[in-house]
Amino acid sequence: MGMSVTISAANEHDAEQILKLQYLCYQREAEIYGDYTLEPLTQSLDDLRAELSQGCVLVARLGEEVVGSVRGAVDPDGTAGIAKLIVHPRMQRHGLGGRLLRAIEERLAGELEAKRYRLFTGHRSEGNLRLYRKYGYAPVGTEQVSRKLSVITLEKEATAQAFVASA
Image 1 (cartoon, rainbow, N blue to C red):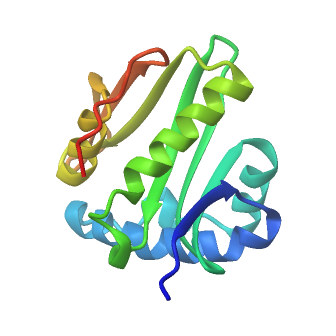
Image 2: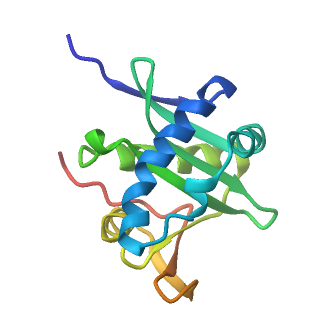
C-alpha cells in the first residue's frame, strides 16, 4: 500500500529533518553557481529553529519523513516573502513543489492577509524559474550578487489565479 504526501505546519521536532533536506537540495544550486557558501548551506540548526518560531513554515511528509518544505512571512505592507521552497530530489517533477507553493500562498493570504507574494531565485535556476512562472509569478527585478550570481525577484498579486496544468 502506497503512502500519500501530506502538507502541514512544521513543528520544532521537524527542524533537524528540514535542515538536512535543505542541505541536500541546495547542493545542486551550489554546483550551478560554483558557490558552496550559499546561506541555506551554512544555516545553523539554531537559526532554523528561530525561523520556525517566527514565521510560517510548512512541511510535506511522506509518512514520518519530511520530503519538502517552504517558509513565508508577511511584512507590514502586506508583501509575503516566500523562501526556501525545497523538495527531496527523488520527489521532484511530481507536482509537490507546486503544492507547497499553493499551500504557503493560501496560508499567508488567509491567516496573515498577504496582498502580494514575492520570492527570488538565481538567474541560472531554470527549474525554479519555470515553476514560479507556471504559478503566475513575473520577474520584477534582478540584482547582481557576485560575478557568478544574479538574483531574480518575482512577484504576483495575492488575488492572481495560478495556472494549474491538468495532470
